[in-house]
Amino acid sequence: MAKYQAISRGTMELYMMQLSAKEVDLGPRCKEIVFERDITTASGVEHPYKLRIYTSIDQRDNECRDKGKDAIRVLLVTKEGKIVKKSTRINRVGDDVMDRVMDRCRELFRYAIDPANRCSKCEDGVLVLREPRPGQAWKAFKGCSNYPVCKGST
Ligand SMILES: [Zn+2]
Image (cartoon, rainbow, N blue to C red):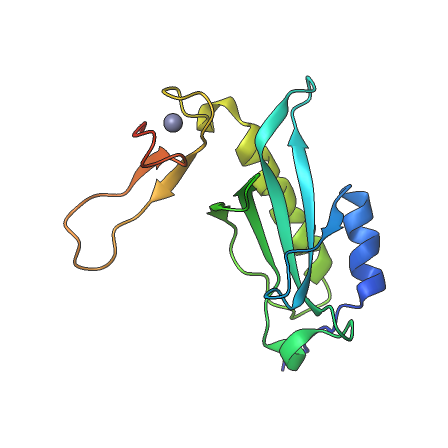
């Protein structure tokens, strides 16, 4: 049986420090500790989006929520907090949980700054995969994260 890892607040803070991510307050509706990191390209250009990391650690008692069932999530969000792209959920199983968190952060970071994923129409949005639900008669494509304002796609 795989063992659930209760990530401590201290451990999470150490890794988030490596990532230059800062703890943010998302208001009373958000019960868990959340970190964010601005995205800047190698040439120093600030990206319109930022990384957000939901830690699954409860901010009231600093304990992992749900004692193991809850996953850590890494998202690309707009400055206003709208979700642009989600990474796969990171279950707290195994000894390499924080390595996987860091991998997801790097993946999303690289995706965000890759010029190939930038919308050529509005030059501001990022192209993200849109997939049909079962039964929907359209094919998956990459569309602009600024939809419906921008209808750019590949
Ligand atoms: Zn666009």
